[in-house]
Image (cartoon, rainbow, N blue to C red; front, side, top):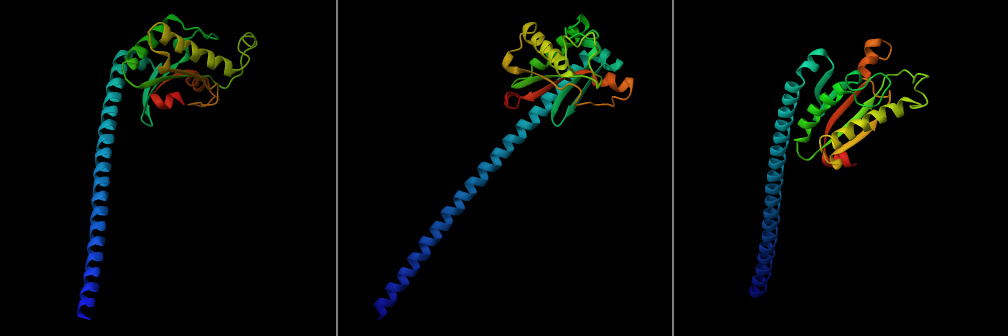
Length: 210
């Protein structure tokens, strides 16, 4: 009887020991997992801080290079949802009713492109925007709607950045938004002038590829 009780006690003790070992192993695995998570989060925080610092340097450089145009209200530089955005009024880049870059526009875009191209692992997205007025009768054969005009202008900017500044095509994207993403009212002349613009946005490389 005593021997049976000892055997039972031994079995219980062995079971408890095995359970404790399993619990210890699980705790060790959890500690390792938390340590890895902490290291990953710390790395992500460092990367975000470095990206923010790089963006701030880029913005400062652009503001210095384009200070005259900024002072005139022709160029606006801002950060939107963690992205650097340069808005250039269309009258600076294009002659009225045209999609080809003028000389003043090339000068401004050269400074923008040279600065943004130095930021690694980023896509330069160029977006064309128009006001809400329909295309005039004299231009309707070439640009039936604002879709064609906004897209043509964005495409010509992208081609300039690639062909004149040597920015790789994989880092460039062009899109036309027509009149559908205004930043001001289309009911006034001043508002329509603000809406007619070229927007240059710096995006993460993977986001730009989607």
